[in-house]
Image 1 (cartoon, rainbow, N blue to C red):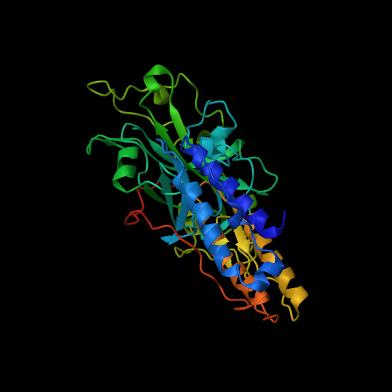
Image 2 (image 1 turned 30 degrees about the horizontal axis):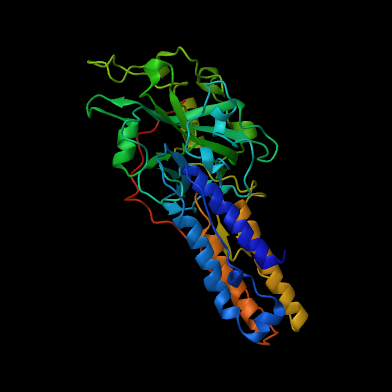
Length: 431
């Protein structure tokens, strides 16, 4: 199988997985006229049709996917209102069959970061302490249909942090978590946090505490749907994003979370806890409702700590300039990003052999993009293919010095933001 054929096969596999997530099947018949061109055929001229054939094959796969309902999944992180890209820095379920399903058991390791949440992704998004974080939840990971979570799924929300020495080797599940924010039932407004999430088009904004020290962290948004809680089936929807937080001190010396505010996940919630057996249909509701887990904790910044101890300046401390991000940054040479995949420029060439080698390299990268694409989609991979097509066309036309547009950024493909990014919700006060 040549590289272009491998790319189509990778795209087909991705679309098959996405279709399964919707309870359907993909049936794609590739006619012999869709066969991918050899070098000789490219030189003869049929190249101009290959892009159309690939697009037809992919379009057919999508069109034949049968749709079904879904729950919700955390897909996208915004930092200070800047979209980091669908799936970027986010540990998402890899199997679209279960991409929006709740965690199956309160004792499962999946309670930490969801299915496949122990596997690190390539990128960790940089964020200053005190930054605004916005989490997007979707019923359909790739936005094929709108919606955040079904209106029947009523319950609380929370956001947790966990410092990580190494994203690659440290476990997400286990001790080390602390909650920075939560919201349950707003009696004054008569609505649950998930209802507010729906009103905000699936967007939930919180602030990182200003006193969070420099370091790598997992940030974990959590939704709890209580529509079946009285029957022993609380539904947790959790996910994690990888962050590098630039604070005022290093986490090793500065982060001290009170024991009562620490959480071990799984383990901070038990099946008989009132928070997960609450009857949302009772009239009246048995208020107040207590959100699962410990109380929120906000680490104090250096200035607040000095004021608390009765001395020192009231001005904020300086950033910890000595601790820079050393892993997980998007490389400067990234020409296009799709989730946690980046396309790099192909080697320069000055002859026919080098041109075809560069074409193969480009399509190999595209195949890797499709293979790595999460349930949010592969539109960036499709766009990368236009670069590969241009190189292949140049090879077929005898233009053997390149690549064309060397080093030019292609521009990431960003999904439309579903609505105005909401302001920061009320945050926990010092600890």
